[in-house]
Image (tube, rainbow, N blue to C red; front, side, top):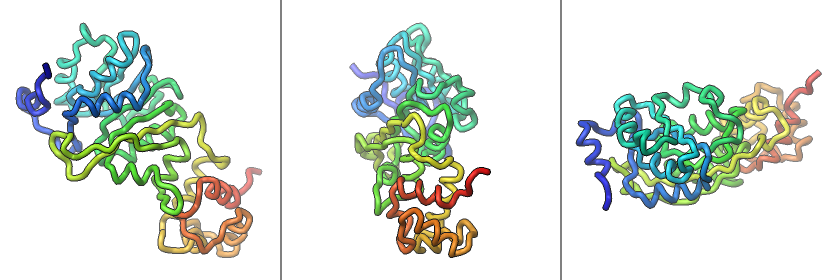
Length: 282
């Protein structure tokens, strides 16, 4: 026997999904189970859920980590936090800790999270996807794995390979190995979004797979992608405010044809180029 639907729950509490928060609630339990499968949660594990909403995914995560585990259920909507606590009472779900917080306002360390010691599983509002990825992946306390429901087009951009790379793809792949594990139709949500979604799994590396410090590396990558229609040589000269001969020398040193465009470069090529353009530490 199934419980009340998402529509029923919202109606019973006099609530409506908030467009300003990008709220779309999944009503298909099978999809929630497959998200948990992708996370490979173990009993006793620690999992962070961003945007716990009505608690559907929270309940599945709690069942997977068991009574000895811990589900840190983060929710920024003050109207949903009491509902979440009501749906997942501590008497039945002692492993669930609902927290009223905007995840982007607290670093992983401020949430008590240690590098590699937790997972992140979330049905993300589309508009904060890039910010959440950056928030967790670029932090020293990054998770071991992330399983995220995102806009399908965004998922495809994240897993792209040359010659179709993007700044987003580079920004994620420096820190993690991404894969799309499930396509999710718009009809699986209440309310129904305008586009399809996808479940994205990120297996996070212990450290970024580059030799140059991330700040210097991404300064070069951002310059390269800032004017994508330009050849790489010209885009870098403009974006880094460096003279052409200096850019040419760096490109030659990295073994890269300056006539190429940013989306054709591999991570290894960006790393070599960034190293060639980064002044040595005295």
